[in-house]
Length: 203
Image 1 (spheres, rainbow, N blue to C red):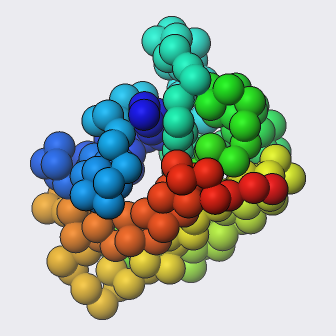
Image 2: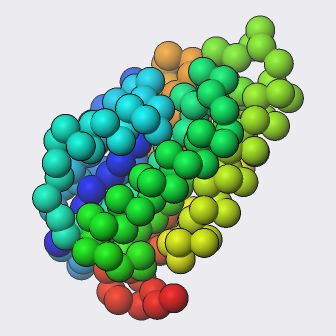
């Protein structure tokens, strides 16, 4: 089975080892559970917005159908103060592309929520409440679009906010998640991915 992970710095694992990236940890756990799946194909880069990711997919032309596609995108739209309306339109298009890449079966796609970078040391001189409100807005949009498309949604944002009181959840760069936080994400994503690959999710 093949897995495609789409996203930005959170998917490529900025500032952590390759083995600590959450899509890599996920495939390791799936294989340990007896679900044989290839190492993830990752289309993601630090700083990418929805538009950047869309352009990269068009350029790289990943060949489906994949058994699983994950999509986590939007933090850079928020960070660059791009409009929420533009985010909705572009996220919806990426979601439809994700469904296309699994052969049209929405049951084989997982959307992961945007973490809250406002709790990190990097944001210490910024308005953390405003960042949290913005993240909540963008997540409300991606969750609504995900639900409308009949796709599984995993909310990791509460985990990201635990970094307020646990510095070990943040990488050495003071901004991105550590491998420890990604492991906690995987604990939420794994049961959903297992059901998908075992054919147990039907909508």
